[in-house]
Image 1 (cartoon, rainbow, N blue to C red):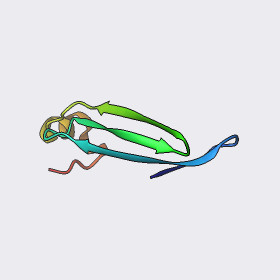
Image 2 (cartoon, rainbow, N blue to C red):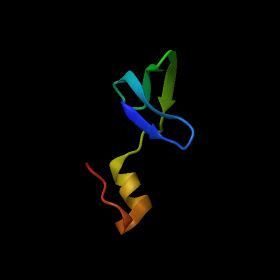
Image 3 (cartoon, helix red, strand yellow):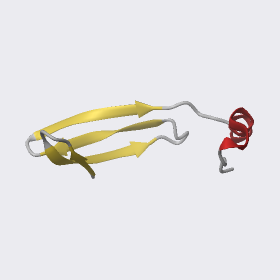
Image 4 (cartoon, rainbow, N blue to C red):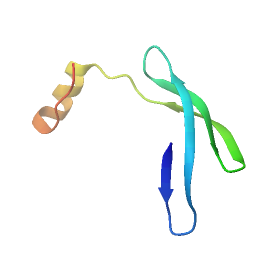
Length: 63
């Protein structure tokens, strides 16, 4: 559930989905009121050591 508090339309959207085994794809459905649809989100897979080297001391990387 995500709450949107915009100036024009305040509403909550229910998101339901699954993450693939690699953790790089989420697919699912969303709905609010009488509206509904599907979504797919992707992201790159990062190696923790490479990411830590890229960001340096700016952020802690969970391993």
